[in-house]
Amino acid sequence: MTDSVLRTVVRRETHSPRTVAMLVVVVLALLVLAYAVVEIVLALLGQQPLLVSPGVALNAVVAAPTALQPVAFIVGGIVLALLGLIVLVLALKPGRLSRHEMAWGERAVVVDNGVVASALAQHLSNESGIARDDIVVGVAHRTVDVTVRPPVGIPVDEAQLRRIVDEEISTYKLSPAVRTQVRVQRPDTKES
Image (cartoon, rainbow, N blue to C red; front, top):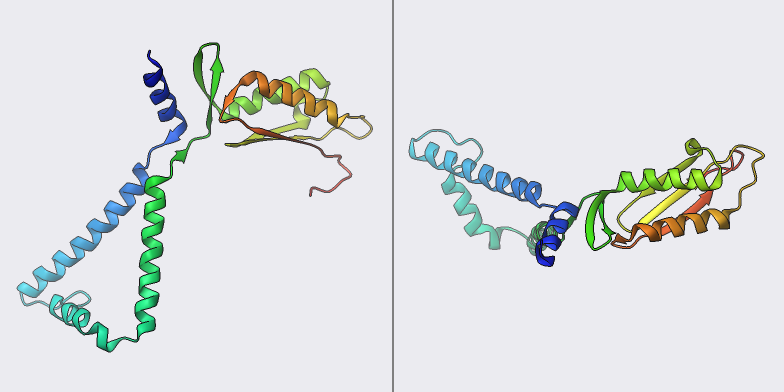
């Protein structure tokens, strides 16, 4: 595989498509158009409108500049601008899946964040002697959060735990890189 093909595959596996956002916008647009068609057909058949007939709606739009206060236009413009901004952000901002790219020699492997968390927790348990059940690891897009809850009376060197975590994370060669946060939480202390 060439580098460009590999980059494309990795990007597709680590970023979510915008299919859902696009589908919601398209469905809403189709519903509005379907409603407009139903109202027009009802008006052509001489039937009562569902909400408002097309002629009355058109007259209301034409009379709006004189009938409404400028504040209503400002509020309506702000609402439309916010909706447009939300749709624009959804269209342009890449979605993220809970996966990271991990360098494996000269190759790239896409690995799920849960796999990274499980492997890190097991490694920390093996290296520190703390039971695996007393270690909780969460992996997000840019951070790894490690919480160690040792039993009462077991001494724990937080600096050593941090060193073990940092060394192990550095061997994974994750992209994008992650920051680590290590906390030791005693059973007699409250979560902060």
